[in-house]
Image (tube, rainbow, N blue to C red; front, side, top):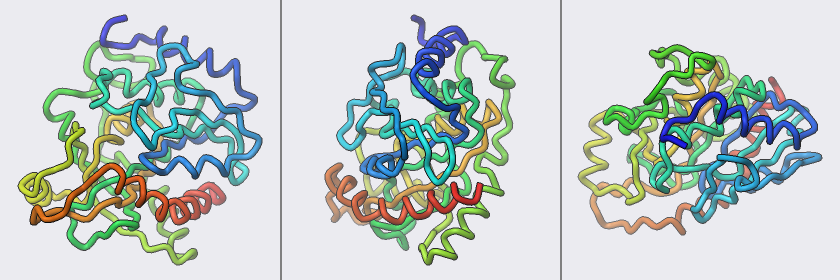
Length: 278
């Protein structure tokens, strides 16, 4: 297989998945580091490990179970990715985008994408939630885009517009749910870096100057693929560590996973509320 997926490759994976599920998911949900427990709320689940599907890359990162959970959540037919794939794991950007392509082939209309993110905005503290209103595609700016290579015309245009990457109606719905449930919800810009090293204080000051509020190593490639294919997106960052602007704070992946334990109940309440209103 080349570095670029073909429609036949995507359909091969989609057909293998379709053959094993009982319903046609309308909503896809991608869960970031330490956020997997939300998938346990899915009712009548079909569970499939990533490695059981042809071409689907296997997650190698702690805190990413690497499973698909397909079933009902708040009355909606959902496909939940319990964990995701990252560029830093060595996969091509085309493969990083494969799960969203497969969701689109299965008829998914809405993608709810979550991530564990580091604070760039100094007002954010671990445990906070941030509604993603826009993003900075730093990896894409340097040439590593999931849309690089031959365009898949069946999915969308060669030059997709990204002016409204995050759906405004879905964002308004999330705001309403947060207000009703008393969930504090920041709003801001997420920036995607390649990783896997955490940022230096100079990095963070640079990113803050660019207008970023939270930083991570995922999400933007998935959103890019989603939007090219016309899939509506709701993005939520969970703040897992404080902005280390002075270089005095040690950031570890274990801290990120611990923060997830605090955040999951709030994230579950927010996403469940949104699903209930769709």
